[in-house]
Image (cartoon, rainbow, N blue to C red; front, side):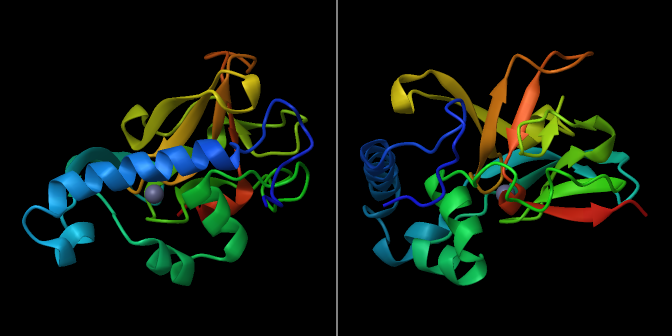
Length: 196
Ligand SMILES: [Zn+2]
């Protein structure tokens, strides 16, 4: 049962069957890589990913190759508040107008709640009227990953964190200039860090 599904038809969580499929698929992938050698080290055999780091002022301090953050379900559950866990790890969606960031106008950066990677800058945040924090671009294309989400008989583009694979929301092409994009995010997947 998914209690986080929002009322907006354009922004809902994947169905349990889709989720089950994804979990099975990743389990198979992990298993193939890890079980052959060392079952106990399955979650520590992380690959690396190139992300862009930012200082507290929001200025890029360069690209860096870092280990992906990979944890077992139980560890994510321990680390994250329950709603954030359902969003980041199970692609749930918080109800519209329920989060703490949709009507939030402070100056700073929005980081991934799962792994602290910088994801969005408040300078690209705008009021989309949807009830979810919305941005017209990520802080760096390197820090987010786009995947096709075909749940609920729709084809949407899901956005996840490049370092921990945490689900963040979706991107739509009805945003404002200059990109025309609307990165529709879940408040509970993000952590606000004031600009220094
Ligand atoms: Zn992350």
